[in-house]
Amino acid sequence: MASLPPSPTDAALMALAEQVARAAIEKRVMVATAESCTGGWISKSLTDLAGSSAWFEAGVVTYSYSAKEALLGVNPRTLERTGAVSEETVLEMVSGALARYGAGVAVAVTGIAGPSGGTPGKPVGTVWIGWKRRGGYAHAEMFHFAGDREAVRRQTVAAALAGIVTELNG
Image (tube, rainbow, N blue to C red; front, top):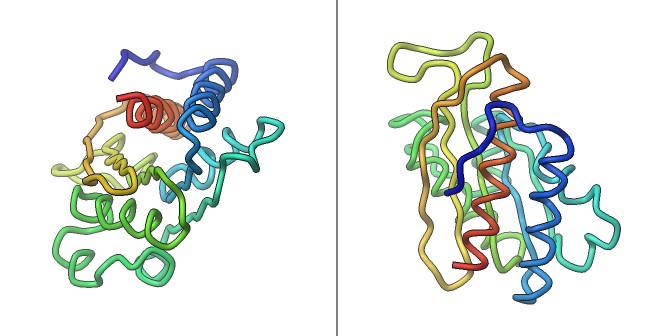
């Protein structure tokens, strides 16, 4: 994945969203998002673009365990065993988004944006991002973003969008 600035500007996020739009249109696929720590910011970035209904299918924000289970089909045992901020959870989130919302590509994010909530094993700034294309395998990457809550969330949005572009063009 390309190197991302420490705290991407609104213009940088818009440029990434435009890259997603171009790739989705070119590949003729709809995009879905499943968000936790970003609270819908990825979806907002994508739908800020006029005409996004041509390539944006759905976005869901699932902060609680029960929302992850009900809206994305995350297994309660996964959440009990690994917690919300884990590779296993984000893989189930992205797979659930793709299955439930009929898109061709999906991204899911879960993390600890802070300022509290971190632990020694999962400090503030720990974020898991997962991507999946229809017919492909889900994959995920763990990030350790620096900065305050806004910076962590901005970096997460940027990495998620850049990953969608990679997924569609790769």
